[in-house]
Image (cartoon, rainbow, N blue to C red; front, side):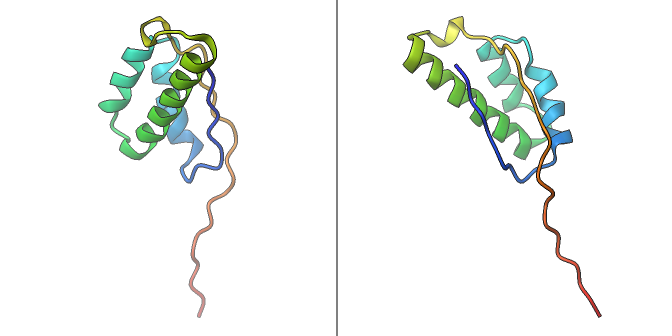
Length: 88
């Protein structure tokens, strides 16, 4: 299956650190890694992507979750986050 998450309000550096942890792992091991990851907000976003890819694989190819693994996890550029700046 495949999942794309776009326009996430988090830095790509944080997401990439978690994406490195799950590349090449089986689906169940990748989900376990995200459940105990130190960066909770980013881990939930990666977990959502894993779930979406699992559902896609089940719907399109009728694959059980035990047969799935993370083939690639790519984090691209992000849109700059808007910050509040106070003026005099």
